[in-house]
View 1: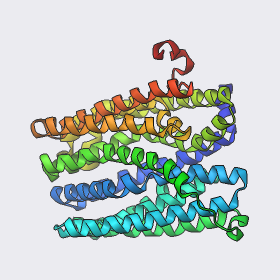
View 2: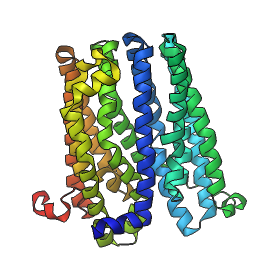
View 3: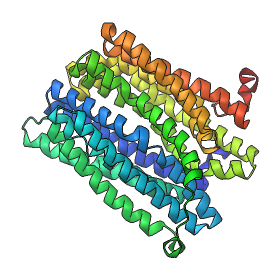
View 4: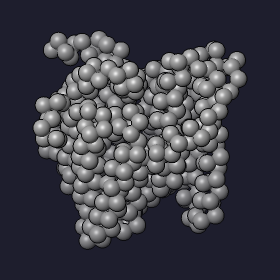
Length: 431
């Protein structure tokens, strides 16, 4: 109890509580929006919307989203070292990369995409990385709650309000209209997040002359882009493959199960965002014992808090899906159970990905996720044609277990840190 009280009273604890509240709001708004959309759209339209959203996310974040960790890390370091010129330079460098990169991919996508519904999702390729970019600046400045406000609260809240208006209006809507709603909500989130970022950035930076370290930054960014791209691929490829191999209706049902299973991860995600700015600083300072203590306490508290959520999803999957989304979505109950077990395992393994990425071992993170993606895609290809969405759930579950297991092993080997809820108690098992 004393350890819990000490953690909650610390800056990390306060940041975790704030991020936890935002993440809870995020999950609630996503859940409510899914309920509304599932009832105001036909199963086929809802499935098509799900596939388009995952496809655009795959295009956008594998090449652009990795800059969020890159930006957060360098903002934190340059702010601590008071290197204002380098801080200004890295922000300009990252912003330019996002603008050029997203523009290029939109043009390429326009050339290949024939379905008009997909074209309404193209703005996401630019908008989502921009939203994450400004949030990363704030988190690098140790404004954890501010950094997640637009992404976790404002954008999903606006999307929910627009969806609720469409629901109560009573007319059935198609996927292109929903995608327009989604883009509108992101634009509002970007405006607010950008305003907060410019307000919180040190005044000294604005008068400084930019310094660019293109080669050094690119060397640091590429593994992160690769790693984040693989993570996002692993999170979205199942929906795309279910849509391609089993039909859009099953893709929509699977997306509902996947989003519901994500409730199991929301406490872990909150603790990751709260602790991540400290990981780099403590590791660079050589305070490994203090860092180990923080990681272990956070992992144990996160696991204990997550267990009731996971058990609820596992034991009452059919009831939850039926009451929330309708009888047609009960077919996804097995998927929900499988994915909830897999996510609970990820919670038990702790902050392995964050620790490796924030201590300069991005290539090991990237390789572990690469293995997971290969397993996921291969199993999806083999299982989905015969098992449908349940095959996708098995494929994704196996990839999550492999990914976290490999990272846990390498975290110990490369950093000497034990990230699981067992902490250093599990030392012999790893060695």
